[in-house]
Image 1: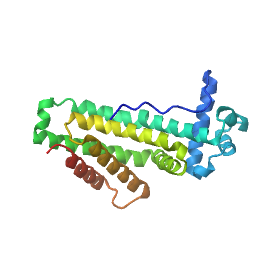
Image 2: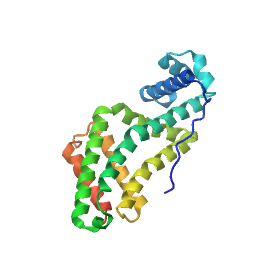
Image 3: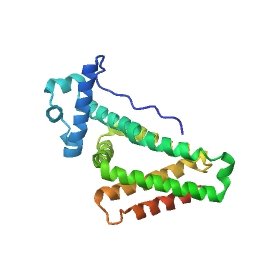
Image 4: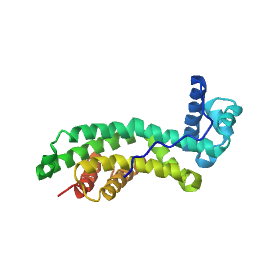
Length: 223
């Protein structure tokens, strides 16, 4: 899987720090409106009110609502990778690379890796649902926006490839075959568990989350 570069912002570029802070405030306000009112609620006036800026500020930085929504989702994708994805995989990679490569063929080591990764993943999912609920809701709003506006397809697909790349890098080190299929399988399991957590499913318990992850991870790791 080729390395993904971050999606590019489409709105007006800023040179001064004050202008950049205002532009970011507008984008974060747009994300709050997106969660609260849906895609159709993201309008210049609603975002300006949420950001407590003049209406002229939103139209200055973003020529139309598509640029505003696209840049808000690009910011969300960047924040997701920087604040959640990269820190998790940094810890996971640091841990797994303590194993000598020749030890990775040992069934006992593979079992330990599967158990530890399932535990780490379980803690991550539980923390996301408990402490970062709005972020997960934004992710769902992101995908809905992409489904309803084909101009956002590219941003969504690029973000998805970036998320999958982290799984691929990790699984390649472990010698997993058909690594991209394995990455997608585990990623979809994580996403499904997060959705269960948001919905308050009675099956969303630490033991069941851990067991679901462990079952999927063990199925994808070398026998």
